Length: 438
Image (cartoon, rainbow, N blue to C red; front, side, top):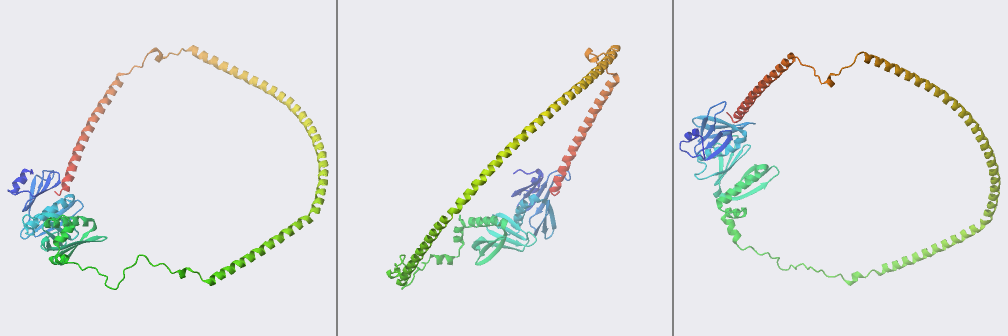
């Protein structure tokens, strides 16, 4: 990989193990013994290279909304700090912590750090040969625990609603590690894959068989006891015996009671039929007795109809006489109305003629007056003749001055816009440099 000249001089022959971009030209480089932070030339500083050795006893990380501060404590030199953008801090923590663990002798030469997890006050580091756990406010110090894969005899996961328990059995003792729900799947996959690579197996089943204690493997190889039901136990029959014939025969007493019930029902049905027949005979007798009464009522109705007919004829004669009298009166009124309308129409016509004659006379007088005025002074149209009004020299000079002033103002505005663009770019670059921890 290509590195700036200032970084090449600071490496002093060391190889670059990892590289983390920090935004812009700034880059973090990891060597076996140091962390180098290169910052390009900017508005606030010149090109620089900062060095932080990996022989620190403690590493503390304080996260902010935009910046994250790393603090390295050394036994003789005290504390050194550097600031990184918060969006790059997680990527930088993994190689920095791996360099500190390698320099402190926690990991062996050739051992790689697979993944670093940080859950509140728990730091979990998965390497190619061990699992390292550190609990505390600081990310790293000497109070850590490590579990070598060679000593692992069991691995299970207990999933919960909020967190997942990683149960790692080491030399027969269980070590429980709690991982948040949102990161539990990644922790499980990383740890399982590291163990599978260490034992050179390809599945979790093969891994459990490989890490199982030798005693359990020996017990599993013995012959398992056969399952016996014992003597004297008859097997279950799938075809149960049929019921006895005696169960299918009904009780004689019940049969006798059913017969008696049927006889009683027949007696009740015949009694009902006799009662219905008696009611029919009585209804016929009643109809025969009511016949003379109906004849008398018909005779009375016929008499009433004749009297009503005679009264109707007399009423129609009276209505006809009234109608004829009414028609004659209407004709007389109509003739009188017609004569009156003729007189009114004649009067209205005469008034309309007089009004029309008066309007015509007024219009004639107005026309004569207009003609007299036009005859005294003839009108001359310049547009029809093709003439245009002439502009004075003063108007032309004023128009030229306005155009020149507008052009000058346009040039000033364009220059101001260019300056504003330069200032905007400078401010954006300044904000970017400040966000990178300069």
